[in-house]
Length: 167
Image (cartoon, rainbow, N blue to C red; front, top):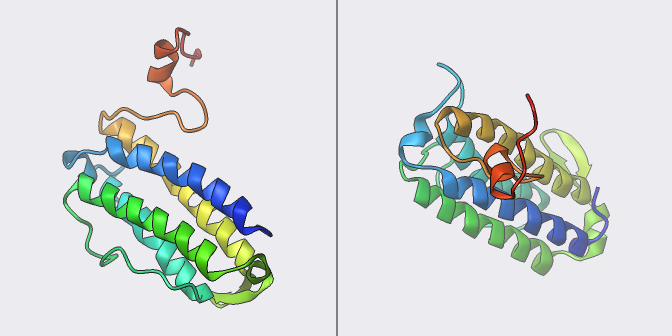
């Protein structure tokens, strides 16, 4: 749980930068990649990451514009990446501009439960990281380059002059 706006902003900046890296690797053709029928596509996951911070944070009383219709996934990977970049910036601006550290201890209704706002901010980040993991698997299946977000990806080991780990 966050108890400081600045601690959240620092972590959000890092996490959202990583998400932007992933989204910038997507192609229009890759958006339809899924593990099978009835599962979210890569495009749906990317759009979900674009829309969900606003959906979650307006429940706390923050004022944030919706990036678009959450049910209508854009057909353009570039459009999704641009919308996410706006959302990430707007989240940081809203938290910094509309709250003080004291607001983080206040509770809001989150899906029928009372969560301190600092916990909701933590959940926004963990939710994003969770879905990024799903996206990297689909990106591999789609033949896309996967950037190393918490260490080198397979392709990046070679680029830094090292052998990839043995599998």
